[in-house]
Amino acid sequence: MTAPYRVLTQHAVTGEWLSTALPVTDLEYGPEVSGPGTLTGALTPRLLASNPTLADPGTTLIYVEEDDEIQWGGLVWDVRTRGNTYSLEAASWSSYLMRRFDLDGEHGGRGPYTYTDRCQVIRNIWDYAQGIPDGDLGVLVDSTTSTSTVGTPADVHHSYWYDTKSLGDQVDELVSDSATPEYTCTTAWNTDRTEVVKRIRLGWPRLGARRTDIEFSTGVNILEDPEQALSGDDYAQVVIGLGAGDGSAKLRQISAVRNGRLRLEAAVDYPEVNGNDILRQRVEWERVRRMVLGNVDQIVVRDTPAAPFGSWQVGDDIYTRIHGPWASFTGWCRITGWTRQPAADGGPRAVIDLKPAAMFQYGGV
Image (cartoon, rainbow, N blue to C red; front, side):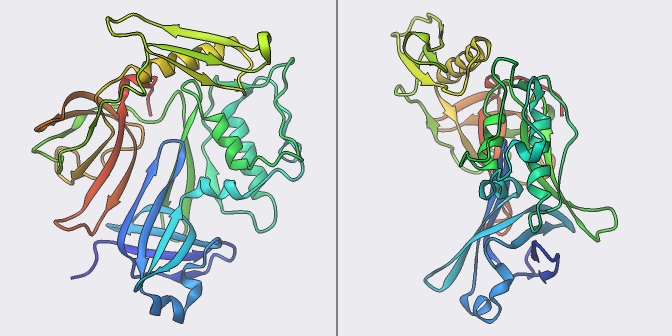
């Protein structure tokens, strides 16, 4: 019986195909919201010993194809021996920026920034990174625009050459709030299947959409009883947010409600925030997040007509019905990432990461 997938590898600089059917076992892969997503698997040491360039860490691109469509792509970062196998770890396109820095300052003259759309800054970062010899992955960044900006005349946003913050960390800061754009990494064949299209999808005000055509349900497509987390340590109806500044000049915003429960407080630092309006939004979002008890953070699903694999995307809100001996939940959940296991025992399945949809501002695709 042939595997339901094939794994391909390619040299990142030359574009040479290294393998069009790499025999990876225990394969798991998937995307995430505002992150690269990961891939893990295993190879036989004998195969790598005979041809170590098949999965050379740091310069090998790796893709997973199912049903003649590329489902995931990224960079191999780690290959190591464990017993009789080689374990393989990879991450998608945005992981590359974690190993790149602004050596010229202001992203090669594209900055500094005043009231600049965060989406444009992200594009500038990628343009800078890929404009340097041996640094072009061929990643395309969406032309999406947003009303979320960085920099003011009083506080211009800079990227300094002497700062050791990676370009990846800079992107993370640009998408770290509920009122900022989101991104995810995607990979696909072009129309004539001669080249791979690597893409950063930008979403504003968020990725995904509310889906009324599919759902996740116990007894239908949810395979295992999920863990339901009820943690008083993380709960709070009062959140104190601290922003930029020192001493009595430090920015502070408080979001508080009374709900008949014992008052619990939490303090959160946002040292990079120098505006009360942004700080207020972050504190409000944090309070809403902390007031949700009984989260179901992860489910395992199989491929069924109720929610076929490929029908949902990162960021989608899916109506979820969970009923078990201990866990009981019914409501909208947002997909923040998933890992597909195409060769799992009993057939393909996916492990899906969820968050309560109420925590996120709703927007179209």
